[in-house]
Image (cartoon, rainbow, N blue to C red; front, side):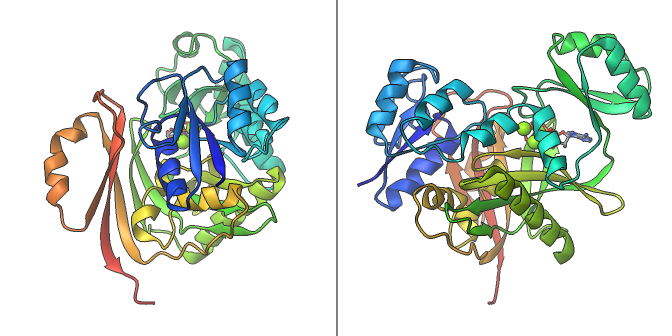
Length: 354
Ligand code: ATP
Ligand code: MG
Ligand code: MG
């Protein structure tokens, strides 16, 4: 029986472990937090920091293949593991996506348009970049941002570059052009070791306070736009020699132009609906890809809306439990905190006739 090592013990690791179990594949988690969501369902748990040399050695010994559920895996850890075992997605996907500057540069270099951006390391550079973008933009730390954390929006009036820089503790940052988008969409795609590529239907996503709230499929996305998004994911993943599932987020401008925002070298929150509405989930597709098993065309059998359960949303859990067509999925987190992802619900709608 094969064993997959998963770095990170959150809900994504948990759902990967569940999918692996269905294929008789064992999982072992590396995660410092005891009782974490993934460890509750995985076969084994190494309780240690992601850069603990002894723990990495143990993980490489016990696992046949290594993957990860978050993009901030220390590069050094990925390199140590890759010296002993296949690490998928390839460590290059981590180094490119961990820094918004290298990420956006890589996207552009591979023919995938993004919002305009400038690296800004000083208040003066920020002021100059803001002037270039007409006073509107988003300052983002280059590293470690998620769920809209480490961001500062310049709305065009009362801009205070100094305060923004201080709020981000002077961390290396980029200024991005403000995109008055019509909607946000994402695609979840998988690439196998042989270069085979399959893609889930794109989702239309709504964020509030920088956090994903809902993903709707089908979204308001023309077939041409869907193809464009899939082709961008394919170019990106070919460019990285990618193996596994990847999530790519896009803005659709008022003019209909598609701009990539960022990519996640892992399964993605905006693909959770796949477990309820498709013949295969993004989690199983990822396990198949990294284990060299056949990928399946992820045909969608139902329309759906995925709702994230964040913080206080859990107060309404009893309503969701009786909601028609609602598949409730909870992550086993003991404590509810504001902004914390506690679970999600996929509400199934019309079935596809063929
Ligand atoms: P995630 O949790 O998805 O990794 P993140 O912290 O990396 O989030 P982004 O995805 O860059 O942050 O931004 C979060 C949200 O903020 C976007 O989904 C979008 O709604 C809004 N946003 C980000 N950049 C821009 C922009 N340049 N113009 C307009 N809105 C933006
Ligand atoms: Mg991000
Ligand atoms: Mg994002």
